[in-house]
Structures are given as structure tokens and as C-alpha cells.
Length: 143
Image (cartoon, rainbow, N blue to C red; front, side, top):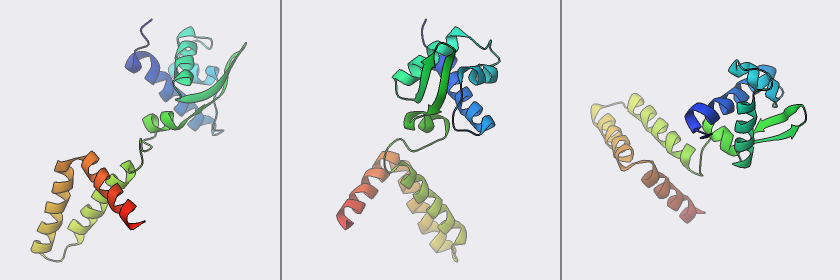
């Protein structure tokens, strides 16, 4: 048993997310998850993957005699399946780039557009970590 992320664990996390989306309750049980995966309702591979996901903090749920119940996504799980930020500032970087794109599109002159393009390209080439550190430091100084 290798517990490979891509072939054994991630599909179960994605199936949990899909089951929650379909039933609309915010929770799913192992039967619903197995149904999403096209597996037998008591598939042991799903059971083992859910245990690993819970132990690693990706999901919350209860393992009983009938299988898993009340499974839901924790923050780490939401980061993987729903694109939640992984640390403070991650969403700020994306917002910064989106604002710069808006400024580029709405620039009234080629000179203004060129300046916004250079700023956007500078942040993009410096990388996410640089931009987040810079913005975090600026926010801390103004607080």
C-alpha cells in the first residue's frame, strides 16, 4: 500500500467534494463517496484513504461500523479542491494581478498602458513569494 497522492488519495478527496456538492448538505458518507468513484459501497481503499486524509487534517469525519459518516472538508482540503489560499496573502497576489490587468485594459494612452504592463510583468517575474512579502510588509507598516 503506497498511499500515492495522485492515484489513491486525491481521487477520494475530489469525490468527497463532489458528493458534498451533489447532496448539498456540507457532509457526505463513504457510500456517497464510493458512488462518486464508481466503487463498491464498502470499498476498503476508500476507507484507508479517508483515514489518511483525516489524520493529515484534510477532512473531518467519523468512522463507525457502517463506514465513514459526516465527512467534510477542512481548510487543507478546501485549499486543494476549491483553491482556497494556502497562506495569508496568496489571494492578495491574485487580486493585485487582476487589478493590474484592469488598469491595462482601461488605460487611456499607450504610455499609461505600457507603465501598467511593466508593473504587472515585474510582479509576475519577481514571483508570488516576493509580491506577498512586499505587500505583507507594506500592510504591517501601515497598521
